[in-house]
Amino acid sequence: STTITAKTQVFCVESMQLEFSNGVRRTYERLKAGKNGAVMIVPIDSKGNLILIREYAAGTEKYELAFPKGLIESDETALQAANRELKEEVGFGAKQLTYLKPITLAPGYLSHTMYMVLAEDLYAEKLEGDEPEEIEICYWPLNDKQRLLQQPDFTEARSIAALYMVDDLLKQRTQ
View 1 (cartoon, helix red, strand yellow):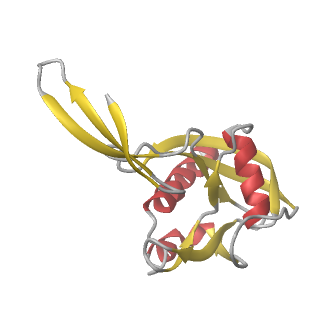
View 2 (tube, rainbow, N blue to C red):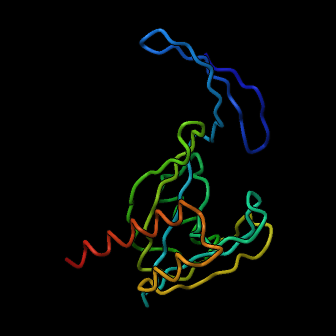
């Protein structure tokens, strides 16, 4: 059985009573995420630059460098959400979106899935977003991945995973 033990505007904490096939019973708690998941977009411009954003992260209480991301709305696919978020956060749309892979973060207690998307063949288009302040846009040469990984504000595991996935995909394309 599952019961809600706490709920906020962002999080829902559930207590789960489970019985395993060997008869062992356990109580687990999890953070229940929204139904639709989220997207993280790795945009690459025509000059071979990654486009990242620097925005305030309440969890670490500092500004973090990461790839643009956002929630998938109920009427969107992951690719549609990726293009919308890209327009809202970076001011570009993409003519070519490549679905990479869904990833989870701490699946032992968090029910959140993020769909990773590569965005290429960019064009200028800005949509109004819901950010509390202007997002800083940062261009980073794709061929300087190691220096990006050394940046003290580039710490988000999802962004680091996305960087490696895109790097691998682009290497496969050239082989």
